Image 1 (cartoon, rainbow, N blue to C red):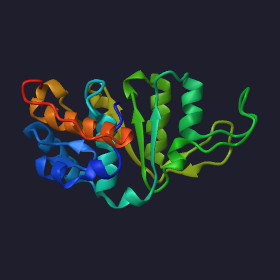
Image 2: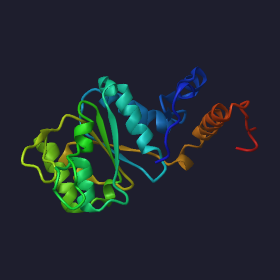
Image 3: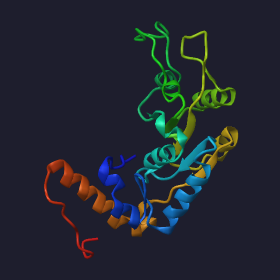
Length: 219
């Protein structure tokens, strides 16, 4: 997922007036509907499944959802599934105890525990092996997490937000999650000028140069 712009520019008044919700550009009707649904579930703590193509902004939406509610004062932790073996992903999510496997030279808290009281965003759920996904669902249902190689579990106290590039209705049902479809940028062209403007603002800030603008013909 493309990272959202951070800092003062992301919350600039002009962006807000043009249709932004924190790090999310929401000028188009499609994205305003997405943000409205997020606002409705921002405080209830239920799991959320964000479904959209790669690059559609799911991580930015997950962060915006975190910032909307009272959990914003607690950690927002991202765990990307891409490139991790099943064993390493389980250790990354659930934590590990020293000696649990080769290379486990120390105890390590997992993403779920590190997000305690906040939000844990699990990106790329469609890539997770069914057995590992079952363990995540079971731990979520029990609200208990057993670190790899451990004998004592820890409580699951984070909100779970899952990102997937394809619909996963069975997973949503098992988690009791609300599914939010994230439209690709090509279906919300009204948002493109705001995305371009935000990128140019970030470049200007980082290079300490005057902010450039593109005319409508370029867009």
